[in-house]
Image (tube, rainbow, N blue to C red; front, side, top):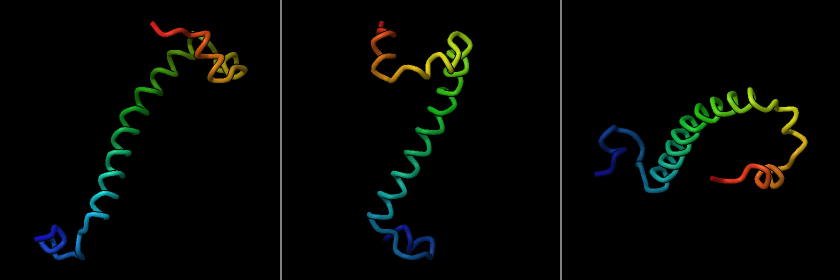
Length: 68
């Protein structure tokens, strides 16, 4: 029995299921990461103002901030 038949709605097929799963996963990951990223950037910008970082591209920043 399909999920749609149980709820009395239209047929709930695999395409719908995959689309919903993708949307839910994206929302949950982005929401959780966004909050942490905002906190990180707030602290980082206290150390180094954003206007000083904007002059570098991502490659230059990667080279100047080595991984531990």
